[in-house]
Length: 372
Image 1 (cartoon, rainbow, N blue to C red):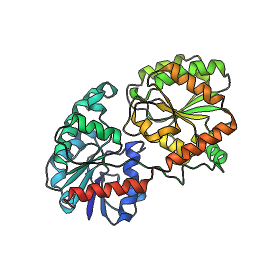
Image 2 (cartoon, helix red, strand yellow):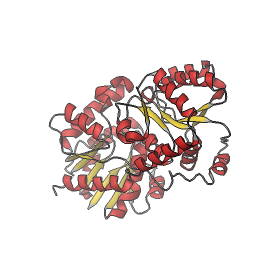
Image 3 (spheres, rainbow, N blue to C red):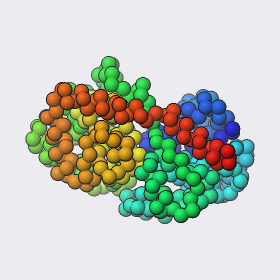
Image 4 (spheres, rainbow, N blue to C red):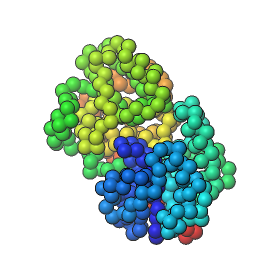
């Protein structure tokens, strides 16, 4: 089968949905697919490094508006689309012209359920794009049962849905902490203190505002604990910036920015716990990566993160400062035996989620798109 995978929406520092596309690109060629990665102009070398076995064709303009217009009007009838048996749009969208059977990944439905979590222009665009893809794609990939249920509720007459939960690299995200201190020192990070770690893009739905308020209480009771924030800026960060500037424990809050791949697992393993108080996600990959490292996780109930973490995480009500601070304080009182038990539970849960299984489900979607 000849597959064209659209990688043009993946930023230079991939996280979340971008990491998902990278992992697909790495693995699909070894599963018997003649895989072509369709990249932005000038972005070929990066994708050749990610996936040496794939073909890489740079066709898509770099500017976002031009990229989306090109996809809608020209990409579907391009040489790369015509040569493919299946086109996969892994980020909500698909070409508006052309006859190549398409598969589209819908990560979440928050553009419909919680538009306030997104920039206004993106809400209008992605509502239209998702509604179009839902009925014009031959198959839809959902990265969770949670999103699959919302697709059924909100999109009438949609294409068949294949659920393909994301995976975790169990070799990189592991329990063994050997070499972690040296690794972190190379990145200028020293972990001689207890710290809670947040990993994620800075944007309103991530719950960083709640985390900062909860840390006020934690910092008062534990004068040596710190809060480390890892991730790149998204949008709508003015409120968080204001809270950071005026926080009573600002000297004990470290902003790490984007963390390189080789430093992320050591950072997780060195933390007291990973705290991910997001109000809603498509999947919540940082939760799974923390569990694989045997790190206690605090995240939000009644979200997809509860589906991912199962019984292995401490669940709090999204947006509740008292809930979150109470959970963080309880973790600081855990005995070594309790931490060891939590580590085993987390690892066992993470081992359910593999990239091989994720790819298996994508193969189901590709064959479905071809009518097989």
